[in-house]
Amino acid sequence: IHTSFNIQMGQKTSTLAVVGAVVGTIIAPGVGTVLGAKIGAGLGATADGVEIASDVFGKKPTLYSECSRSDRYLRVKRIRVRSIWLGHGSVAAVGSAISGIATGNPLTHWWVEIETNDPSVWFCAQFAKPDLELSKYRYRSEVTKRGCACGGRNTNCDVTNKHTYSPGHRTMGEVEDMMEMYCSYNGPYNVVSNNCQDLGNYFYDWI
Image: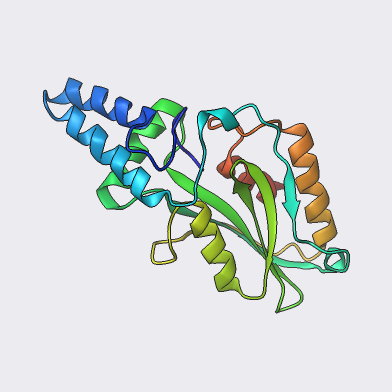
């Protein structure tokens, strides 16, 4: 999830709100505080179940995997790297612009949807509070629901496909091993250089 530093999701006061206030004040006196408050409130209202507080930075991620021993032999039929806005409407757009300036990242959450050669087995790979998870589902819609939930949204929002690829030769065992290595070698979650977008791009390049 892409946010600015030290955001306590679920609260109306955040670093992003302060940045919005400063930028808005420069542009037009009296606008900044209102704009910052709207952004902070919008993020707080849409971040249900999302906790990325300042104390998680520096913690080495752990992989939580629901890939069973038998699942490891399944072949990866197709992957889709997907994303959603973290916020609603104009709040998300303005917040993304400010966050992009401050951190180089827009306010979006990315996840990887994994379709296997078993039509009843799907996986969702993503950063989640702030560890990595490889969760298992029976339907594609459930993967979308989980990805949106980690972005603080429900499924009634626009989902964008960033990358799609059909590897044909990768197994779920290789996916699980790759994610374990990602935890070991890429260090803790970092809003600038090791976040959900980086994981999505890494996954796509690796697959």
